[in-house]
Length: 276
Image (cartoon, rainbow, N blue to C red; front, side, top):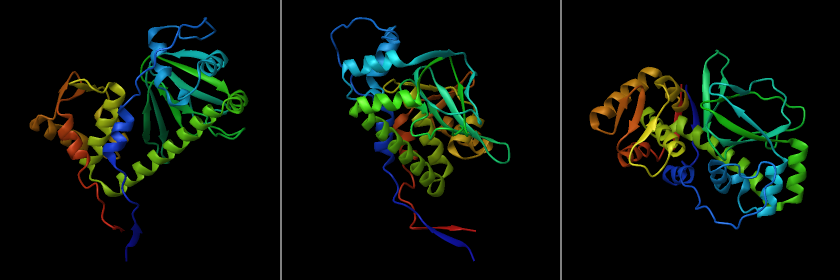
């Protein structure tokens, strides 16, 4: 006799997609004197204005945080964190994209998420002495800022807004894990793959007519929780329908609205899921 598991109410993916791909409008501030790490380039100047960790912080608070951070650049495919590394640092991406992954007990890599400029990569709420269980690897040339855990804790005590931001980021991360669990338990592979492409589109640039996805079918399968064969079959089908096309091993999203419709298929799960 099979086990029966009650499912949770399914999140509103359309709202989640908007949250993932919409950045707040940057505010214009008057010039301030330069400090160590103070907005060295136009790229750096843009990322912190939309980063969740800096939300609602005053200019003095932002400048103090940036001045206290260590800055390091990584070449593509460089490992930033690997399993077994001791924690003790809060890491935030300032530019470029990274891949956060974990290896299963069978030795297969599972991509947990793709992070970009402004995203916290790890360290928030991590108890002293704990080691990382995942790998963070640079996808492209990227810059990472880091704060020692005790230093970040002092900054949180000094800035209530920073403390609220840190708690909100951890809450949002838990919500995304719950949503991914619901997706795996209730949605068809086609919906999961469409959602994966739309999330990646948010990182690659929202608002443009066409978005290029530079991940392989195998990597897309890892993120969507399905097989390489299924990803290849679905992409071929969607190419025939005019939703996407492939070019130089890249997937170009052509019709975002129709992909969003596929992503929302079966969004209302059955009340019970039979597990045999």
